[in-house]
Length: 328
Ligand SMILES: NC(=O)c1ccc[n+]([C@@H]2O[C@H](COP(=O)([O-])OP(=O)(O)OC[C@H]3O[C@@H](n4cnc5c(N)ncnc54)[C@H](OP(=O)(O)O)[C@@H]3O)[C@@H](O)[C@H]2O)c1
Image (spheres, rainbow, N blue to C red):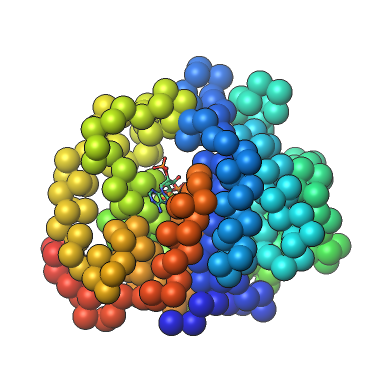
């Protein structure tokens, strides 16, 4: 398998694997105390993990202004340092938060906020351009989104961003952004347990990259929640909001999800792959447009996930076997 893939129609080339920087933002929350981060993280370990990923050929990093209420962007910017020009940085806007209290306070889908948010992200990341700027409000009104798409075109012409995308699971919404010439991708949920055929079809028709969030089903496809150990109180998976699937009420993983992971174990761990590497291999086989962005919190996870690149995609036969095992 080629270890790079095009970022849709942008002319930008990225490693076929990106690194997702949500967890490395550390703890943050909603005003009612609902955790929005993945518990405590060690910033020095996060920096080492990003640099290890760079050494292993990863050139694509996905973050958001709101992860850790600005902290993820700061850590990523510090880790990249002088190597910033060698990589493709994707971040997101649309949420409003308080950096001091690390609290999400709301959202703002206005073009004025878009400019304000971009200035703040550039500052935190220590850069003067964003490669891929993504709208983070997945269910926003489409008329409002069309205004933002046009505002993004202006930002491209000003040289502040190179391309843009919408982070949404709704193909009809993604299609609104796809009308803009510099829209390069859609970021959406895709993993071996949660297929998204309509979104893949749109990516093929509109020449977009399919950037895959939750490629490891938030850790379930890397063995999380097998050991019966309780999750940290600050971990979003310990008090899952309605949209977070597979973690039950937080006291244990959904047995039906674990049964499906077990059913796939042999095919995903073929050719010496770990389970997580197999989950990434399924995504590369699913479409030539996919670019998974697994999260990470340590050098060991960075090495295992980046190691999947060398092992490549599942075969067509294995892809069919997965569908058979899941009754799809
Ligand atoms: N709305 C949006 O735009 C949106 C939403 C979700 C995600 N995203 C993006 O997508 C990225 C990835 O998705 P995700 O965070 O939902 O989850 P994911 O990639 O499906 O799962 C990541 C988690 O799995 C565990 N893990 C990763 N590699 C591992 C390994 N080698 N061995 C064992 N465990 C491993 C880690 O958690 P533990 O160590 O705690 O087990 C890690 O934080 C995010 O970082 C973010 O950039 C965007």
